[in-house]
Image 1 (cartoon, rainbow, N blue to C red):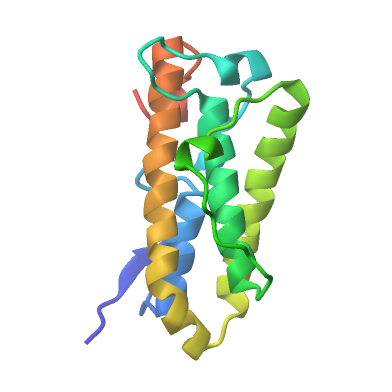
Image 2 (tube, rainbow, N blue to C red):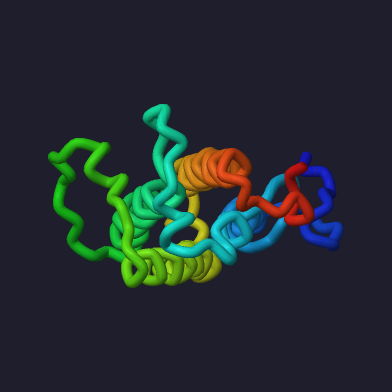
Length: 166
């Protein structure tokens, strides 16, 4: 038996689609239990995005590039586009940014995350059931790296605690 749950201001019987959309949106642009990616990167300059703490941690820019890389690959797979096997080193996905590539990466991340939400919204039950585990993992992956972004920003002194994390 499914219980009613609170989903962004509504009480409704959850469906697989509604749960996955809630997960995707909470890691994209709808603050819920934690700060979403769009808020985590908002207002950063390329210089700030490239800052590193000197301990081997990734910069915010590198984390965003990594999220763009993996989310875009998975979205393209969902959309039936050809995606070649990745034979590289995952470290290659953490690319540095300059002013132009930082602005592009932030925009692209938003577009890709929107695309994932649109895929879920349009998917039939069979397609959604087959993709559900991957979509849940995408949300977990995005939440993890968004937390890293906020941690780096807090270390840097560029995080505004009014955005959700003190």
